[in-house]
Amino acid sequence: MRKINFKNYFTVDRDSSEPVYQQLVEAVLHATKTGLIDRGDRLPSINELSRLYAVSRSTIEKSYNNLRDMGILASQHGKSYYISRLDPAPELKVLVLFNQLNEYSKAVYDALTERIGQKAGIDFHIYHNSSAHFRTLVKRKHASYSHIVVIPHFLDDPESGYQAILRLPKEKLILLDKEVPGLHECFGTVFEHFSRDIDQAIHELAPALRKYQRINLIFPEHTYYPGTLAEAFTRACAKRNLVCRVSADLPKEMIRDGEAFIVLSDEHLMFLVREIINSTDLVAGRHVGIVSYQDNDAKKAMLNGITTISSDLKAMGKSAADLILTGVGRHIANPFSVILRRSL
Image 1 (cartoon, rainbow, N blue to C red):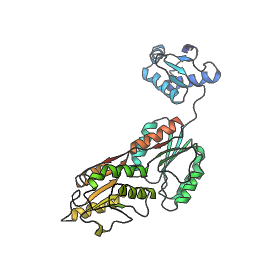
Image 2: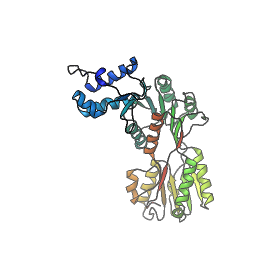
Image 3: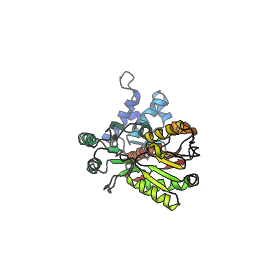
Image 4: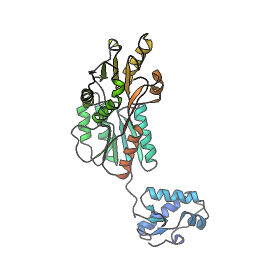
């Protein structure tokens, strides 16, 4: 591994409008392109260059970090910095398509962008659960991106939306939250294993659920959750001898002593909470049980604490970022947790 004498390749132009860190980056790129520096050649340490050119360590660090982000430079413990490739790595440009922006999707997006940092450019679009809007976005934009990250929730015409996803290049595709029917080729995904998760949740909550006469899953007709979740819920209850029911709506007359509810939507949760607050003879966790999907700060305080079944949204965002940065199309089951509180 040859050590490079930087005086042969680089001088600082202090009168230039170009920052010193960028001058150093351009000097290294020029040297790799012209054959002056080869793969495996060792560069001086940050301290050495700082002393040599009388510039701050942070300036040299910024140069080296830029070169490392390009894939040109790598570091090895005990061997300082060395040239790992002669051409910059292909630019990462990511198109993120979410169905809506709420606190849950925001948590995924924030974790994704924090993990990626400056290593990729990100364009973010909301398609408002519309397959038509989604088709327009991907048709116009997908060719110019290295990766396309999609939460696939369509309320108007799911089949049309899924077909648009099936036509995307699989090497670019990363799906979040749930799987798309018919998509079996090599692509990246961070998915919620709804059937397995609800079975595990019922197992963990069974001791608390047994004090209720019936467990109701409120599963709206138009929902982001797959039908397999309702089927798995019924099987999980039967396995543990719990009486259960799946209902598309939550009428007021259902809310009575001895009933427990697992609600998927926050709208149904708020209706349930209001009815219990306004009731003179129903207490959450004693007469009526409540379990909500997806935890947040409000649910920690509501009715002295709402029991939740919650996917780890930050982990989902971080895993998506890792799929982008590594370029490996893996299928990752996202972790989830059950948090038992006083509402059950």
